[in-house]
Structure formats: C-alpha cells, structure tokens
Amino acid sequence: MTKWSEETEEQLILFIKDWLKQIGKSQSDLCQCLNLPSTRMPILIEALKKEFISGGIPKVATRLCEIELIWSKDEGSISTNLDNSDPFGQLDLLYDEICEDCDI
Image (cartoon, rainbow, N blue to C red; front, top):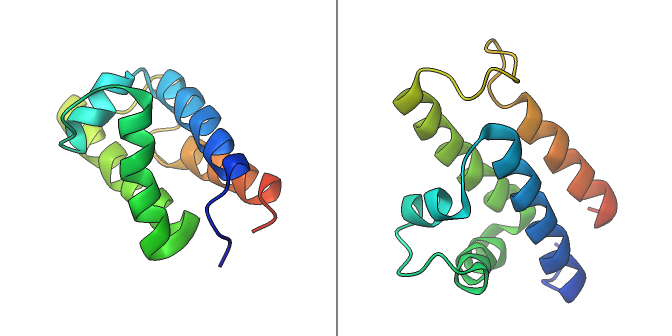
C-alpha cells in the first residue's frame, strides 16, 4: 500500500475541490458529514488521512462514495450534470485519475 506523502495530500485536496464543485457541494458540507469540528482544509485532510492510513485510497474513496450516496438520497439526485443511472460515475473517474497520478 502507498504511504501518505505530500504528493498524496496535494492530489487529494485537488480531487476533493474538483469533486465538490462537480456535485455542487461545499467543503463545509463535507466536513459536516464527517462530523468535523471545523470546515478548514487541514482538519478535513487530517480526517481523510486517518481513513487512508487504515485502508489506503480505496478506503478514502469508499467513505466519499458513502457521503455522496447520503447527499443523493437527501436531494433526490446528485446533480443535473451527472448521469442519474450511475450516481458515482464522476467520482469513479476522479478516483481513477488519482490512482494514476499516485501510481496506485
């Protein structure tokens, strides 16, 4: 399993920002779902780093997919930009891109 590095952190930050933008959610929304005491990026990254340490990028992706599923149930659909038959399509594409960038 790949170890946490500065590059992993940078890629995850870019991924999160792009993913949230694509689904119309904010960093604050994500932090709230993770029950974090702050909406600051360092706190968010620390929480995801714990997920990473216990299961790598797949565990982080699984956690984000769970959150996206919760959001989709709350709103009826994730975004008009996404194919409703595959609500995780965009997340899957971003996950694949991170894996390529991190040589996972």
